[in-house]
Image (cartoon, rainbow, N blue to C red; front, side, top):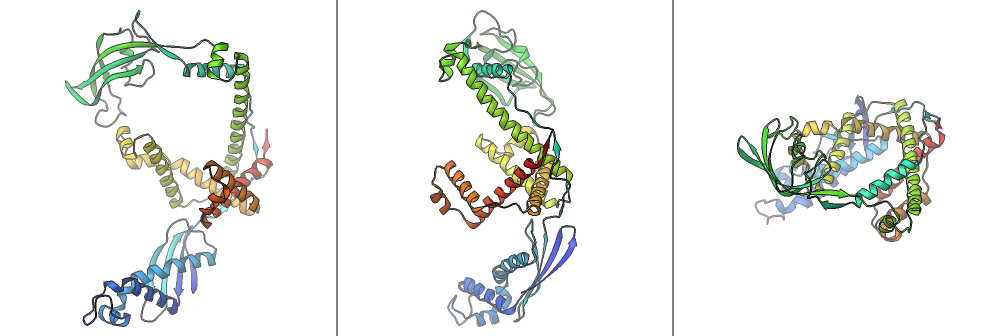
Length: 427
């Protein structure tokens, strides 16, 4: 097999690959065996005509498509490996010579991973994030726990106030006609939460249980398309008013929400947990600050396809999260009044940053000869297996070579980041 490489554009190369006639003949024979049952040649039962007869009757080009599919991918992979290229997309294949007992010649045009020009990456100076926990932090956490354990108490001696939960029936009208999605029964609404259309909740302050009220609002201009900017009137009945009653912060509260008998012991435990969380956040922030500085110091011309691929991945993840919530992307776009292309643009900057970060860290890993030991790989497999409640041996049986390579690459990436952080100057 002969391979020639030509630089077509920045980060785009074209390979001319020549597969010898014998290898292509193997592909033609495989194509014939795959398709033999489709051929109907006079004088032979369907699918029983010899290959030479089939080629004479139909023309040998009838076997080309599958022969190309059998031969080209393997030849392309070998050529890429031989030339040390790192493609970032599928190639555009163009057949230049085929058949007639000749070698197969084709070109493959593909975008490859760009070169990275590293700047300063060892000893970069960044501001150190500190991990500290104050008495106020502990008290605020205590209040959050109290909020989660608050109970709703019915209010009967006064009208609704901000902070109350009102249970309402409502029906909305535009130009005197009900509209889809504009009604509800027994809906719990926290006044002042900003859950409903601006102005809606304010007009229920001062309304007593059992009262009915007409609420007039205007939908925001950025609301979903069919309602944006329109005026609406809601007929609302307040069925019940409830007040959130917080528990007293005492020893009984500590017993109810924890394994501790006293409030002081519970607070000491909270402080320790907050300290560990703060240390973890500070460590993460320090790591990110170092990475940001190193990536900022590097120069790389990122191919557009890499950014698009990253956006595709981010959109898929977003769609998956929506599905866990009972939505899908199309419904979300309708609710938000967004076009798909505009939605994708929201990921543009973060996608470009992710790709550049990946490229820069990988380059540093190569330059610094960052290694991953087999013991590291085994330990990582054991950790992942534990997450899936499996033994490392059982989990390993399901791993492919690609899976192992992915684990090694991820460990190398993380080890490279550790190298950068260990060598950084925190001030």
